[in-house]
Length: 183
Image (tube, helix red, strand yellow):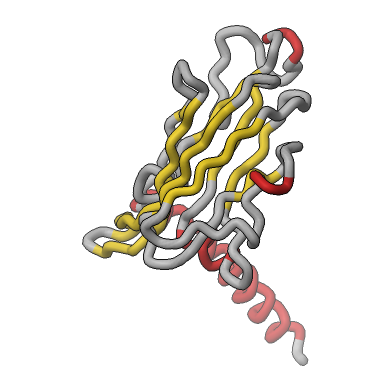
């Protein structure tokens, strides 16, 4: 290879490698932002209602994409629970197929943890009650349906589940008055 050809090839590769940066910035400017999930806390009786349901999102102008969500079209609410307080969760399945809700990272009994053995058939509701006693943490909940977990998460099922601190000072990452993106 001649030196001149090498320099041309190197310049072409360098210019081509910068194209994704330009096109990514232009594409991102037109994309809608991901929704920030609402925070859901138990009511006075310690109950939470979750509905697995279908929905639609417009990621591109005039192009509707079918999605699945929890209490909405995509993803779900960020569930905030308090350490040591009992909670009862009613999970209604309004999807066209069976699903589950697995509480990933929570130290709770297996019979309420929403594994593949705990399918919720379409049109039915499953009620689980638990009291987790673990340090404050950010966990997540998602389907754990045998052979379909990835597909159901990809469609939009899942979101954050957080244990509330018993003392605000015990969280080194948050100062009083600061807003957190994920609770």
